[in-house]
Image 1 (cartoon, rainbow, N blue to C red):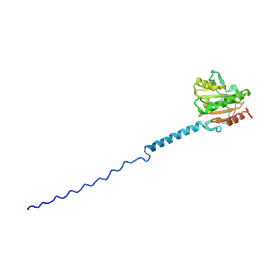
Image 2 (image 1 turned 180 degrees about the horizontal axis):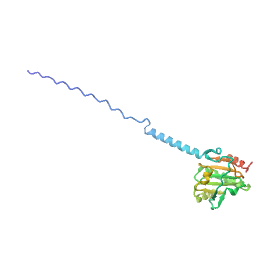
Image 3 (image 1 turned 90 degrees about the vertical axis):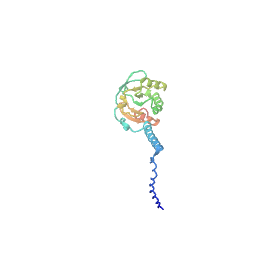
Image 4 (image 1 turned 45 degrees about the horizontal axis):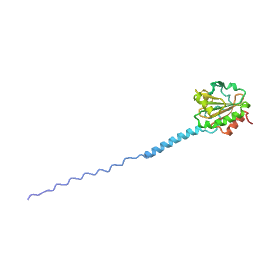
Length: 205
């Protein structure tokens, strides 16, 4: 009788460890979205803060300091293209308001400036509205729509804006009869800041 020898069982192959789950971003899609949204909001808030900058001391944001002689300039009015210079108002106090039709805070100032001009132009006050780089016809139409009677001056190549250090709107200078800057408002005019500026150039006491 023959012996039957059992074949040894083959050793079992080791079971591979389970695959590691894919690494997930700590932020995830939603986290990246919210971070992007926060960054965009921060940029927007910074822009709005600059645009609606409160009245500041002269010299901030590059505007000219009180006590300087106001830079002379020659330009043309938007309504009729008439030549106009700062020098022609020597002997009169002048308010120069830098603005733009696209500037929402500037729009809130124009009724206040118009009322001031109507009240004090007979006493020699001149107000000049220097528009920032817009077509003359657009500036003239704005003046017509809002009933503005003080001269509006388009500054197409920004020559006047640069001379006065204007990089953000609005900015308002108060210049006395000798051509010296006596006050400057960097930001939106309030009745109080306007009154203070007018007082500095002798229009009100």
